[in-house]
Amino acid sequence: MKDYLKDIHLINFKNFSDFKESFYRINCFVGKNGVGKTNILEAIHYLAFCKPYFSHNYEEESIKFGENFFAIHGNYGSDGGEVFTKFSCILKADEKKKFRANDTAYQRLSDHIGTIPLVVVSPADQILVSGGADFQRTFLNYTLSQCDREYLEALKDYNKALEMRNRLLKNAQIERVFDNTQLESVDYLLSLSGNKIRAKRQELCDKLRESIKVYHKLLSCESEDADLLYESIETDDLFSLLQMNLKRDLITGYTTAGVHKDRLNLTINEHKAKHFASQGQQKSLLLSLKLAQFDYVSDRKEGRKPILLLDDIFDKFDFERVCSLLNLLVGGENRTENSSFGQIFITDTHLNRVEEVFKRTADTMNNFSPEDVNIRLLN
Image 1 (cartoon, one colour):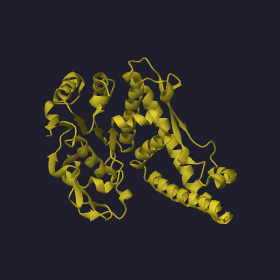
Image 2 (cartoon, helix red, strand yellow):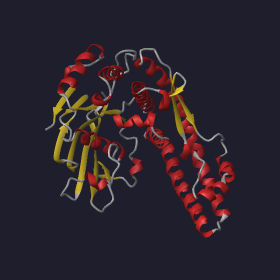
Image 3 (cartoon, helix red, strand yellow):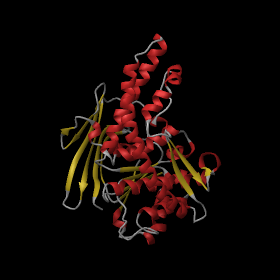
Image 4 (cartoon, helix red, strand yellow):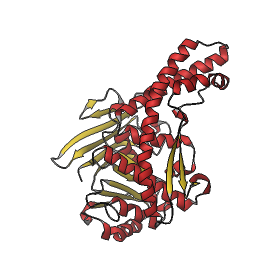
């Protein structure tokens, strides 16, 4: 294992007053519901993306009840020379969130994205297959933002321009008049960043498509064909499309066309997974999508393996799928000899299930020893 999270220190975060833990190659947090297993994964996600993943509510609610701040500290780096950087995320009530690397504050939180590559597998992610396009676009943004600085900047520019355009459209509805010159300027900015986003998303989806086909074959025992298609605007000339849709946009009061409407078409045996796949098929497709994301991030990071967070997967994914997932991740069946996994974090409510899954998969783990696993019981 090269780059990894060495340890973490939580102060007044969620249900933890003062929690410290050193990490191994595989880290399992076991305990009853409500003891804080997912909160530890949430803190790790904060260190990677400067924001929560599992709880999308008001961030100040992450501050422990009765306190006025939370702090997350973690040392991340390489074991090649014991070179680690201390990252800190601090949020005080009624103040802006601060993020530091070795006590030096970032001017922009976005400058940190991609420093700690990370992939999450959670039962809630099932909505990527069964839910709306908003979640699919978030998945694309998460994947690309930590690998491509140009994409992240284009996304920020697009969102700013989109907000400005929608405000102009809404004002035009109210005042019955609008400045066409100003709107054209915004359309130009929107199309400039939107065309970059579309091209990079298409490239990403082409890569994911190749991997998903392979992984779903493995997870379905060669019985099914999965596919992914990127559905976006049907023209490279976004500016002309925006101008063409202007009358409709003035009526609705918002922008009806653009990459903010992109979606994924996920299929199994050429049928839409959202409508025709069983729950089991959808779960296998989700795992295939996440494995494809893992490989893409690793490739774009020149072999740096993302941290992998597996939250509560035993309760929502059947035991065989979990075993298949770990077999694939740890460089076992159908992986190349050098395809070793990175750092993994797992949560579960039953100790025996965690122990059994490693017992079942031990024979397929390359370069693996029991010393790589740490099981922490939380009360």
